[in-house]
Each structure stands twice: as structure tokens, then as C-alpha cells.
Length: 78
Image 1 (cartoon, rainbow, N blue to C red):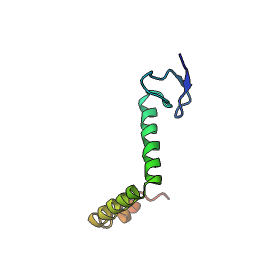
Image 2 (spheres, one colour):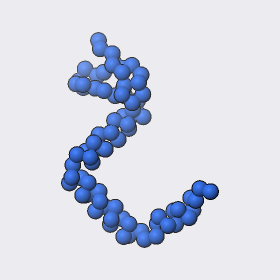
Image 3 (cartoon, helix red, strand yellow):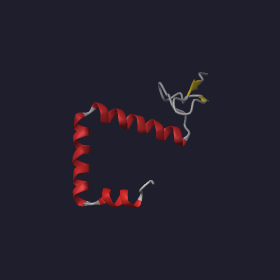
Image 4 (cartoon, rainbow, N blue to C red):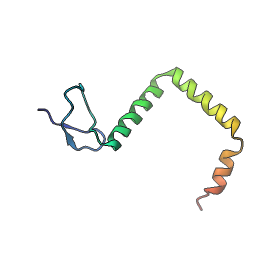
């Protein structure tokens, strides 16, 4: 039986036999970190995904004019 170290929390875990090259334990926080890293990698490497994200945020900001000014005014850190 193999013991590995989780890349998110650093704790040792026993990987599932069905999951080849498992690098993260099954804790919910570690699984969230695994998904976050995977998504960030896809966004870095895929020009289509970057373009899609840019269009989404452009559309969102057009539908929510003044959001960031209002947010900054309400969350001023002085």
C-alpha cells in the first residue's frame, strides 16, 4: 500500500487504487484547491478560455455600470 503526501495540506494519505497518480487527499478543502489549480492552469494555457473569460467580464461590466466605484466607496480601507 502506497502512502503519498497531499499537495494542498501536506498530510499523508492513501490514494484510491482506481485513481492513477492521485496527488490530493479527499478532504473537501484539498479538493477545492485541486479544482482551483486545474482551472487556473486551463485558463493560462487556453487562449480560447481567456478570450471567453474576457468577453464574459466585459459583458458583465456593461450590465453593471458603476459597480466597482460603488464597491470601492463602500469598502474603503482607511
